[in-house]
Each structure stands twice: as C-alpha cells, then as structure tokens.
Length: 184
Image: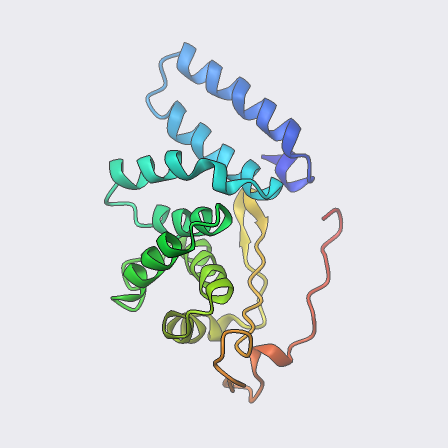
C-alpha cells in the first residue's frame, strides 16, 4: 500500500475498499482477510487501531494457527484503553517466552507490538523477555512491509528494568534518538 507509506491513510482506505469490492465481486476467498489487514495498517497510522478490536478479535478466534494476530490485538486493546485485556494478552504471549511467535516476516511486528504494550503498561516481566529478544537487533530499524517503519525504541528504564547492557556494551536507552526517514 504505497499510500500508507506516503502517509496518506485516507487514500489508502479508499484504495483498500476498492480492492475489497473488486475481490468480492470476482469471488476471491481471501478478499475480506486482505481488506482487514489493510484496514489495520490504516487505522494504526491514524491512531485509531482501537476501533478494530472486534475485527481483530474475530481474526484471532477464526485463525488460531496464526499467532501474529494476538500481539496486534493486544496493541489495539491498549489503544482502546482496555489495559487489563491488553495486559492479559501480553502475559499470555509471555507465558512461553514469546516462542509461539514464529520466526517469519511477522515476528518483528509481533514482538514490537508486544513491546509497545509492555512499555505503556510498565509490565516488567514480559518487558524483560522482549528486551532479550530485541537486543540483538538494536542497531536495526524494523520495517514491516506496507506498515512502514515501526516504532521499536524500547526504553528499558521506562519500564523499570534499569540500564541494560548489550553485547556492544551499550543499553538501548543510550542509543541516539531515531531520525525520521524521508517522507514520514
């Protein structure tokens, strides 16, 4: 969705809706799933992901074999100010050390979504596990396809972990602030 990457969520939503209509008119079985994914990106960019809690919850329920929906649901609940539910989802993901998130193209979105929830809710137990998972990538900028550059600065001091050394002797909190890529 180039419109999302260009920072134009209204255009992105119109294009996604047109594609959905074309897909349903031509009988594409995954038209709704793709539209839902595109709408999540739009609402995320608009700061309105919380509006999609029912839709994302349905995706979690109907697709138990796709654990990548759970962290997004936790982030949506956080944005909708359903903090207790967001924390429950975070704790469920942390129960296995976040191992239920497969190491695929969705992994980074999953762990950074969970990290966002952990930071905002100051959940130190899950934050500790997430910190360890994200530490090897401290010099990289997560880029999630059409979602674009995903905010993944994980302030360990903010969640009460204190300074955290990395392999290179620096804590994530000592990294310089990220600069915005062109067009963002």
